[in-house]
Image (cartoon, rainbow, N blue to C red; front, top):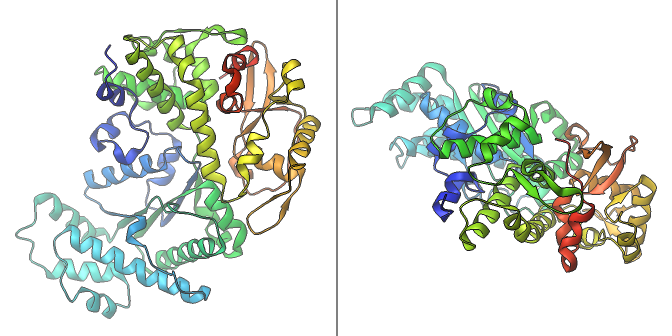
Length: 480
């Protein structure tokens, strides 16, 4: 096939869900168990996950399904709430300011969507004590809808009948610095949402947060324990990511598969659907010599859909530059370093709010000359990992946000939490990798459960750019 930019985007999708055509996104979206945990009638759902894991995609699909079902739904973006609480320092007053602000945003957005916003809307909302559902139902009943489309009348009728409104707050971490003011504002927002959900029966809030953002807020404000039961951790496994890739490729060729159908297949079965686009065998070096291509892919993604989109897109562009109609080993080899550098920069950007000097910590994990000679430069026993971190600390102490000094075990736990290192165990020809379990995300303690540790393969070319080919010599593929 011809790897034009248009075809590449159609094959693998856009990195950012908001850039994707919604109908196309719906057609190839892989709904997992998390989707059903978020897309329901519960009053508060807080979707927490790493950057690039698909939080915005889930919200976009859920909103499209709301629209198709005639349900009233609204999206609140960062620019909608800009300025709220910027100058308020009293926490209780800050919560009240958020409640007033969210009330007004919901009311105005709902009215605008139906072309019913009038100059006196704010005064009428205040007459209802800020209870926006009562205000909207009263307003919708009183208006003449002769000029509204059938679809909009269906939404209004559903809202008047059920009193349900779905409010999505997405991308709130845009511009997040992780300072005390940011933490207080977001904590106040979560408290305000909880109060509004209690006071205005029928509103369903859906909030997405990066895991590092939630971590800082959760550990800085004890009042947030009241919303912990509403938190849904978003995580993928490699099998689901491979199924997602297959669904997208099959959709490009006009073939549709359901999510249960694909997930029920083995990875070997799924890999056969990749053959029209890429070679089935990766002719690498060392432990990666003549392994199935899908195993190479699964070894390099950090259980984030955006990773597989980025890697395949880079390789496809390389194939186009070489005039090839199928992605081969050489195309992947040519882009490993660029892919790796991108993942390293993503991690620095994502977690700098927790440790300002994170880049020095990550780059310090580069294998020393002696470690390269022993072919174990990225693999550590627990004590070996501690020794490596102590060596990095000689360049200066590391401190968490707020000034607390990070000890050796703190830094080891941090590296594991951000998936820079993973737990590993040899399983025949392959490696079993265990990622940080999201249910333990709030733990500061380093847990040693009998595994060794390794720097995730996605970062290794960025740490060793002077000899890219060496990385494949000792790198072993994942078992799943």
